[in-house]
Length: 387
Image (tube, rainbow, N blue to C red):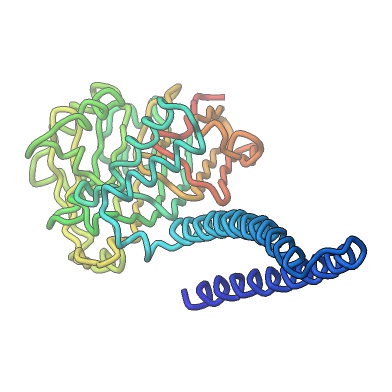
């Protein structure tokens, strides 16, 4: 502000100095001119002074009017420039915006979106969609890293045969081996799916059951409370098989067939934490892990690692859906001879995943998105059948 005052003062002094010089020059010219006329035409000294003063007043009025207009225009231009600089500073400095209320910030953001898009419906859509990420109490999540590797085997393992899993030797199923690592950030500082004593993985018997489970609310909404859900897609006799396993044996059977491993941050490495309980439901089952990790992490960020195997009937769909905004997802699917796999992408239309980010060759689909956020609910579908 001191610099601005000094500049303004200097501008005023420069204007006054220039005006005085011009007045003196005008006065000199008028004096010389009227002296010449007086000598030529016999004017008296009084006539000479009257004419000089009268013309000088006219010259001064013109100079003063010019000075006022020039000063006004100069100040307006300076004010506009200063206003633009202040606006740029406000837009670029979050620390300054922190002094405003949340409502003021939302109004500012909506005005910015409106100036860029100029479409009322689009502005309303964007503003509404962003609301949940502003409301920290609602616990929105984002994923800053997502690495998903899927290995397909044309036959089930010997464990399925030993357990008497229906169809294990009939060629009805192929085996999916999944390993998922992702970094999840809970924008509210925590999330109910990560805050409780129990961390859940959900397995539904088919896609319809999973979709229904994700709509459940209340105490029985275990699929909604799970940090990861998968649909098994098995025959009805396989569902009956799982439901018929005695309660004291169900955990060991699921462990042998699915081999589930769950780690969050540095937890899940010892034998006690590797234990889990199985809760059977009408449309699937829930694996409940008790893990010791810092649930009060200030950043609300956790590194999650999930591994398991599972059976799936041939000629079925395997879907990878990104349920949270995810940065740079990497999805890799590998399969063996005798398997025919076709991929369909429904990632963001503008994403590079649709314009060359997928490497495809015999036995491999490798999708790697660089420097992009992919938004819910985007993903890819793999149709898997026998070759």
